[in-house]
Image 1 (cartoon, rainbow, N blue to C red):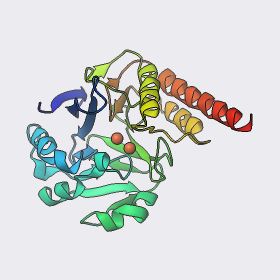
Image 2 (image 1 turned 90 degrees about the horizontal axis):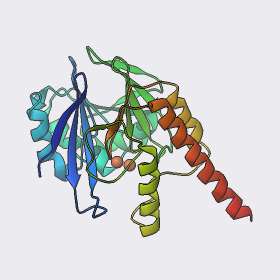
Image 3 (image 1 turned 90 degrees about the vertical axis):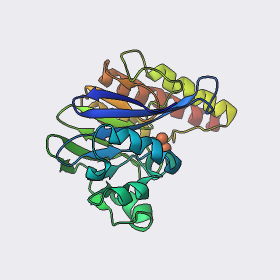
Length: 252
Ligand SMILES: [Fe+2]
Ligand SMILES: [Fe+2]
């Protein structure tokens, strides 16, 4: 099955690849986001082996060689496995990421030097403004960060709110319950348990709620256009409770 392409906000395209073999029977999605502007930006390259699928999908929206910015949440194969394939087909393209990601991985792993973004720095891509926000260890990885497109108020959450299934591109239904349920399934089956339960998780997610996004663009699952502030605060509270429960269990 080929990628599903949907425009989830003005000039922002979700390229979704469903993999039924992961976490069956529900399956699992990998979502890449293309943000159009004078300097088009991709958030998540997709896995290296998905490059033919993702690049074909992008080519249906714009010439792949016009890509200018390659961004992602953190250094992992699904987030950035195909970055060098993208650098090869788009001569003006550059990886952009936070200081930690560049120093730890990207200065070495990217075929051209990355642009280092400081926390809160904005890239004006012409028609869209992309703010980079450091979120170390949230949901995982010390190089973790998210981006926020200010004109459409779209928060690209990366792995936050990860949930199973091949739902619609956009939903107004609850995404907090499915995210917590998916994490529990992964934990029980040891498939993976993706959120680092540490002291920074709740305050970091609450800070994202302060942005008052209109849309939450999720890497794994449906994008969300309901009460985003409540969803982020509810997720933060749920992790806060899990952390406190885990600490209480340890000291019992
Ligand atoms: Fe990840
Ligand atoms: Fe991911």
